[in-house]
Image (cartoon, rainbow, N blue to C red; front, side, top):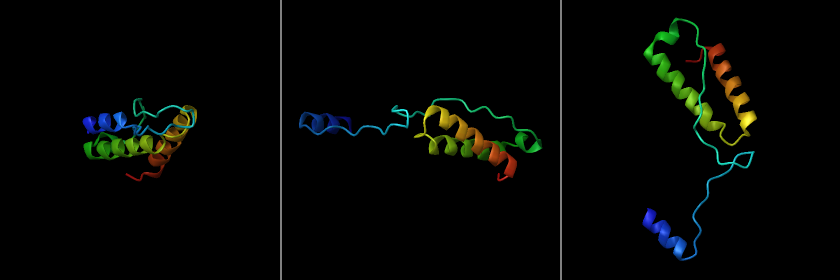
Length: 87
């Protein structure tokens, strides 16, 4: 794959570039989402796995928002999930 990309570049074919977010930056998945999960459900491993996967999905879905909008949207969605008990 890398060799083909190098050959393409040598032939004048530009490599694909990652999409940028609303701030003009390449979004990353690096960051922490810290959530207080009260209740006995949070102690169960299955619940933790489902919740972690859901938070990861939320983080991925919001990657093209600006940094401030993204943090706010992640917080809103996670709180909504916890309030709704959809796990």
